[in-house]
Image (cartoon, rainbow, N blue to C red; front, side, top):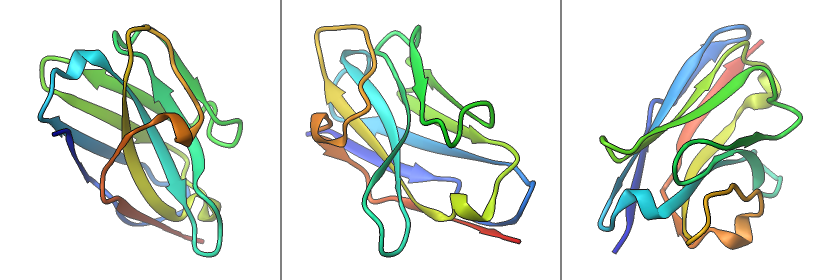
Length: 126
C-alpha cells in the first residue's frame, strides 16, 4: 500500500521561501508520477505542480509558474516543492499525490491521482 507523508510547511512572511517534502513508501517509487495540490479554506482542491516518473517533465499552475519548482529524487523515494516569493494567496493545505502509470508524462487532474498524503499547512502572512 502506497503511503505519502508531507513535511516542511509552516508560517512565513510574504516574500519568504519554503521547501515541502513528500516521502513515498510501499511500492516502487519510479512507477509513479507525482503531483502537488493545495486547498485553501472554503475552496476546492487546486493543482499546483506535477512531475513525471523520470523527473524529465514538469508542469505548473499559472499562479505559481516561475516561483515554485517541483523535483523528485528517485533514489530517496521523495518529491519536493520549492516555493519562492510566497504570497498570502499561497496559504493553503498542501497535498502530495501519486499516480501509478506506464507513461512518462505529467498530469494535472486530481482525479487521476489515486494516492494522497494528509497534507502540510502553509500560511503566508502579509
